[in-house]
Image 1: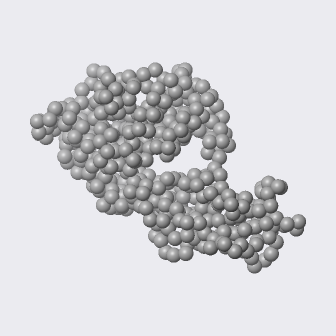
Image 2: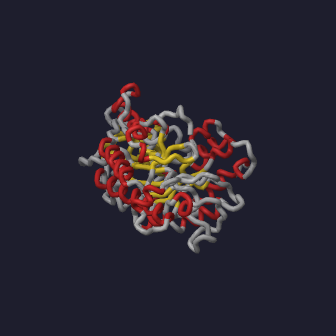
Image 3: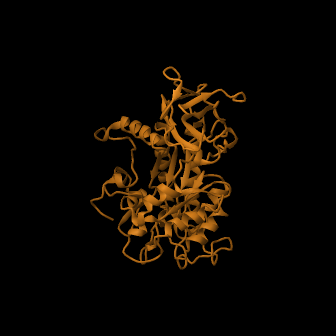
Length: 433
């Protein structure tokens, strides 16, 4: 509704990177830095509303509907849908992104006393459907079309949605959640998330469960359980509203244990792959020392994003792991490692270094054994030995390779070190294949 808002705060007609922002090289630099930090890149798009000065608004005023002071795309206009599809195709074709991510904006949230005047499109394209069913069909058409486009252009690119946290209440639908939400995805935003999951149009869903545990009408624990049983085989990440810890009003998010207890609850569900926080800015204030709690406890170890086997089930070849044996035969504080791919694989982009206390404890499914994740090509890496507990006399080091799709290779041949009185010795092991 702000007439001074710039178009870059909303959907854009062009997703080229301006030269004064660094141009295309800025994207390449960002991609590399993200990979170094273990972060993935996605294009987070706002699919339904627009800045007042956008070229789109000037050139195609009939594409937009004014609603409570904001201009929104008309999802019922077929020209709008085709143009959105072309924009997404252009982004996916030109940038090697990991995902296209849509937020919870489809039709706008209901505002008391305001009507969304899409009568012209409804009269033209309604085809005998009720207004509600027609609006849902419009959003369905957009999601289905974009899903096909993304996979056509880049088969390994993921498509995900972070919808409002309530699909429908059980009073509206027997398959709905035991909630009393005033608005829902299905009935108010016209977003039938369950249909998209059932038909495999999206690869993951991240419902915005921004309410606290025990919140009246929309309790976090009830919605967590509901979504865990309605992901239909797609990946599920829980959106957690940490921003509410900085709000003035009281409530569950004003309790120190709120975030830790939410994490503990979601980890009880194998259907849940992790968390997405809104927003990262909140962590800068470190409310209730949550930064430290996450760093030292819940996220103490590195993690590998679970692969989506329907996108890629191919495991890369196992890497070659070696060490610098040219200078010394006995190692003190550190050991220089070298890891490389054993064959060409355009999707291979990382290596994972594991350490174990013996060959009998080599469980690659436990993240506490991960010491580092390296970006390919990895020139060298220092493995630090000074932190090994005094009573531990054996260290086993191995590596795996990761594709950009997060499929992981079998482990490399391992390096076996034994502590002697004068330092660490690398010993040959007969069954090391």
